[in-house]
Length: 236
Image (cartoon, rainbow, N blue to C red; front, top):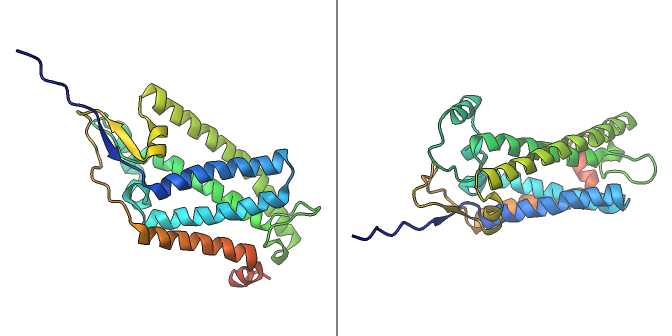
């Protein structure tokens, strides 16, 4: 009697197109920010890219509320008790998207990037370049924001390094193709692998247009109407 044919691996959709575009545009943007500031000394271009990234982050924050399940903060950000329970339980399946532990890395990275971009709005190099909102705060506040901007850069570098190490560990040690999933949007699973959070819902184009509208509006206001933004924020 012949042996039954083993079940073939299957592919499950994990990441939608908007979150994948966000991820790779963010990677390119952060590299470009470093290149223009520390290598090319093109601070004007550095600030222009920073404003574009700030719009991108606004899009991600909105998408984290109205977007697909694997992108929603309510779906993967868990309380400390849930994180401990996840760490203690034996691995019984695959978590689609960010698992409860990986959510901490996502929050830390987004927070550090947001701090870097917001402080850049008020920073001043004391020579020629200044952020679009620097004229609306005191010189002391400009110096404080510039100092935080410089210190947080090293915090961001450390988080990026930790992120890359974690990706390498999952990619090569645990054989979980995270990079491929962020490129194709699908994750390859063995036939007997169980999904711990099955059937994620994926948002449509209306939600994407809303989130993109928020991001573009944030960029446009800071790029072209800084005095109005300063007035809204109650700055001098």
